[in-house]
Length: 617
Image (cartoon, rainbow, N blue to C red; front, side):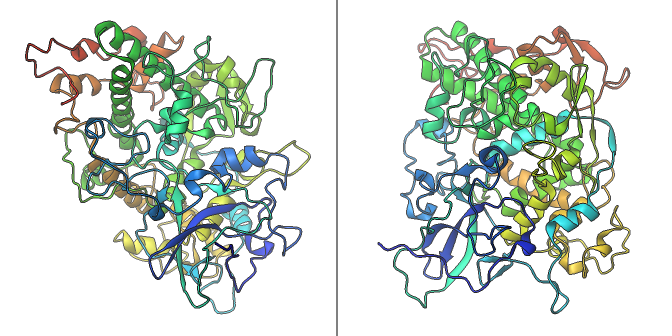
């Protein structure tokens, strides 16, 4: 088989992209005959428009690109070919009917790829590409180009303090944590090598639109804890049904990640998602839920001494995944979305019936734009105990997780988060992953979000308003926007990038986001709920919890999990809201309800008890 470069008729100049270090998103290009190929489209570097970008164009290649987005060698087995070229998953194993697979396959038995890791993301609207592969770059005004992402970022998204009163910084951290549970768009580090593409292709064969890969399962299933491939899972699993931890009950060391080691004894953390080292909130929550798994597994082993390690592990994983889902749907989403959106998309409790016709696969617009709203919530000042640090001084430094875990989590639940608006911390827009303060080599996450949306072929903002049943914006002076600076950077309202337009919208009453993001978030969380056969509220055998077990899970809270797995002795009842003496008082940890695992006690096979879980449900 020969290897060919992807033909293009347009060179993407650095002025089009305005980026300091570009890496190529792993994309499958679907041909008119239905075949596909794993390729990455080369970008031009800032210094030499004709040169393919090297992955080491600054000193933090893996820390800046890889730890943030998923920098993968294009020889990784899952990326050597596009998903539809791989064998169809086999779903007849009875274990796959009761317990989730690690890679998400066979959740939908009739469509075993739906929601599986390393599958193309879904499209809600047809992509906007030039010739099927190149990003949108021209204005609706003839002869004009779209504004540079960096220019948009500097004009529309200046640093400005905007606190969301009553909402804790844990809302931002939890959003980032679950994002890394179900979205991961990889980039390749193929350097200047010829792109592996297509084999022998007839010159006249048309290349269709590219589709980006999601390396994670699309389900809220705890894969941030357990991994999403058998290889990753095997490296993280310990003995007796537990997860691997150090003698100090911390996450194990990663042999492949890159991070900054501040103190003797520091090391890069290993977790189900490799981005664990990026932010102290991520490291803290990853550690918290590995500890929660091991705490539950230890108790289940005591209650059921006859269970083997695999049984203990799978039952514990079921509970932890249910905790993920309950905390997200019962406590977190009601702060993010308004009551009308929650009702429209049936996101409340005790409202579930599995629908095998719903494809839960994460959509491109969700991973690329709408679920990035939380970037606006990131604070420039990071509170760790009584210390306040600059955001850029905490990134990729696991020392704060390793040495100050309780203080870091205390800071997240105590400090208010920032509003979702066009104002961003300069630790994200000017100093992200910079090597030092004088190098001026930091990344701009807002620019990256804008450019990624174009690279992924996302239609402009107005098209998404129309998709959501909202009127198209016809004038920059609309009252829909918080910011009035869009007219100073865009030439036409139909040029506005989705991330920019939606982040500038006025919030819906009782929500943290505006109507466009609310629509896109509501739909995705609906689909990963009703399209998930294992959703924790299911009443179907063999996946279900008993009624009493479910009631136990429905009373758990993030505050209780923090209490059970750290040195904290008191905390507010709702970790997602700041402390309030009346509505959200600080209470002793012992007063918070937990899970009574006695309801998971196995019984003799000679007796009948409808409340006992078994391999057959």
